[in-house]
Image 1: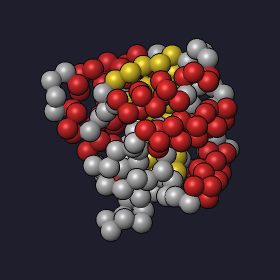
Image 2: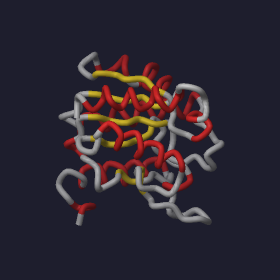
Image 3: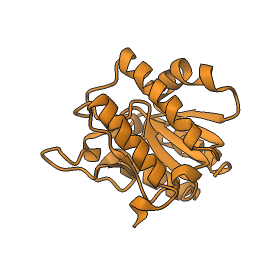
Length: 186
């Protein structure tokens, strides 16, 4: 099974340990993605409702472009448009489920999420680029990750793929252009 593949198992263990440490719902990494072999990390703000398998309308339990929501579909369409199919891993600056999509991470959660991301990055030894999708991912990375890891990664900033964001002039195109730049690293 994909969930136990060598490229995915360390991330599954890491996410399960994080869920235990925080006593929180932490969606798993998509087992169909690159896992620890990722060259591009797509970093979003926080898991949406369709990542939570315990919701009234159950989600997948994964951070995935295959989730049944418009943000996931927007990411999939942009990735497909630029051929960014391999070498990618999606995650969130705050990796635990906060609640409805309208609940955004606060400054404390961004700091805690940044600390957890710094613990994750050593597992991604092939990583070459990070796509920061949305202002909260950008703020969390800039304040709580970048100062501690050096300048070895290409950092690409873009808009969040939510329907609200993509309805703004130019945001969808900017997002697709950012993924095109990221595809050079995959």
